[in-house]
Image (cartoon, rainbow, N blue to C red; front, top):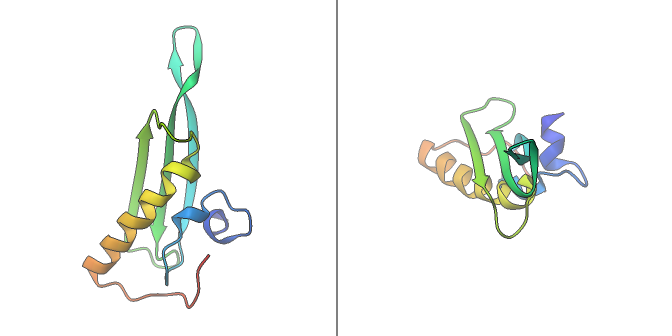
Length: 102
């Protein structure tokens, strides 16, 4: 199920894909609390993922407080996850587990 967030057609975390690896993850978008409720203009965007999905070697949480370009975790946090995970996998010398990726 969490793999579909990244790999399925229309998945909200498609930008978290890591070439050669299966990724499982979850996007998040939350309105920030304000007195009496929640903000309609201030958000926290996030993506948390594990890679490789079948036998995780790396878990990364990216949280963006009050993003400027967009509010959705799949748009602003997922690409950062992808770059961080690629670097981490390279440093840990984790072999690819997928022939293709989204």
